[in-house]
Structures are given as C-alpha cells and as structure tokens.
Length: 261
Image (cartoon, rainbow, N blue to C red; front, side):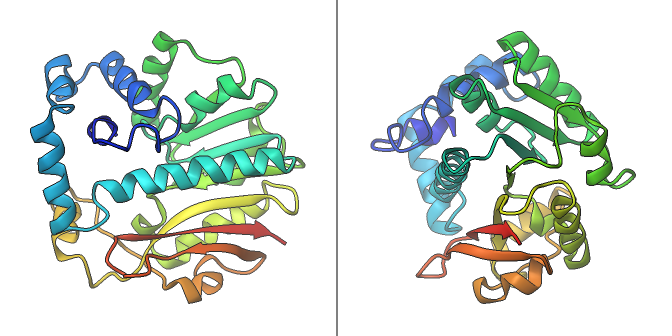
C-alpha cells in the first residue's frame, strides 16, 4: 500500500489516508523489515516500477490489492449508510480499515479479530498511534474457540445488531468446510440483512508464481470458488448480492458481498 500510494494516479483512488496510515502503523510496530529506510525506499520510482513488473508476472499482486482495499472500504461505508451499527474485520493483521473509519464514524462500533500473536503486535502499534474509543481489537485463536462464542462474550459486539463484516484475503487459506463453518458462525453473530464483504480465489490450480510463494511461506491456499458457485462455497443462509469477477480472469481474486437471509 505504501508503494501503491506512490504510483501516479493511485493515492486519490485509495481510501483516504491509507498509505500514510499503513506506513505509520508499520513504523510504530518497528519490527524488521519495516524500518524507516525500507519504507522510504518503498516510495521510490524504481520500487513502483518493480511492483508494476510483478503485477505483469502475477496479475492482482500489486494494483489488485489496491482494488480490493477500495472495494472493502466502499462496502463497509455503504453498509453503515444503510443502517449497520457495527463492523467486524476478520484476520485483520495490519489492515487499517477500522483504524481509519473509526475516527470518521465515532458512533459505529469497529471490532477486529486476529490470532493472539498478530493481535498483540497490532494492539501495541495501535495504542501508540492512538486507539479510537469505538475500536476494539480481539485476540483469539479461532481454531480453539468459535467465532460466535468470542463475539458473544465481547461487550464490544451485539449479535442482535445490523452489522457489516470483512473477510479480506482470508477464505482461501481455509478448507472449504471451514469456509462454510465461518459463515455459519457469522450468521449466528449478526442480525438478518447484515452483510459480509469478502475476497475469494478463482482456481487453486492457477497462479503458479503466487502459489509457489505462499507454499514457501507455509500458508498454502486451500479453497477456491467460481463467482457462479459462491452460494455453495459459503453455505446456506446467505444470498450473494454483489459479485465482482475480473472480466479478463487474469487477477488473483474475485470480490463479493453476501447478505444474511
């Protein structure tokens, strides 16, 4: 995001302040390789050119991430405009959506949930930057405790409220049965007509370069879905109200929105 924000024409397209907030969060985090020098280099023209070349080798690996951020931000703001009073980001990592929008919407509850290891690092960084009072970070291993239990036990979340959730860059790291279980947990944690914006991989057999990279990191992709099969992919109780496939079918991901029936 720091590099994409330095590419001509992109800063104004991305959610307001996203590159700056991403950089500030990483600087406060302070762990290698996110040093001031590295982040300064990430804004250089040669870094932009290198990332653009990477996009040609693996479509969706640079600008595609920016398009995904724009989509998620717009969907959350649209849900708030339609009456959602709380927002959940799953597997948030160092995403800045809640941190950015919590200040803009002080009456909306923003909740992030992530694994304790990542969550603790994010908590320290957010605390130093100034955590909005309407933003809560939950650290939980969802392999050990169900999402619906974590949310039901949190005073920051009300399972009866109209809600918006984001599962960005997450579902394809879960096997297909776990994707459906996650949506069952979400269904139990939100009022009817609540929405979930998510990204999904098209095909596990494609994208050899990206697949090799995630396998090398020990986080292989485990599930995928064609846009036409999304209802079966996420399971019963949901209606797909928006599908945004790449018309050329070259990018890594499709984007979609599901509404709780």
